[in-house]
Length: 93
Image (cartoon, rainbow, N blue to C red; front, top):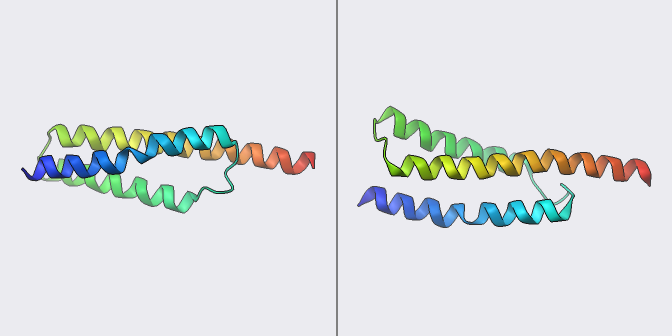
């Protein structure tokens, strides 16, 4: 039961990341995005993954952690792409 509840939490929390990713891609700006926040979330997911590995609880919950960190990773990539857009826009002005 704990794994099911942990998975439910991760799914609920993780559903926001694809939405944020699409918004960031469309916005083409990093001005409203916090790099510190994205890195903190990444660290949290890494800690969750490490906890599963250290405790030898390798199960379906680990897959949800990996999916979530992959989408947050995509958000990080888009953040840096959007920072380039912002820099190019500032030069053009």
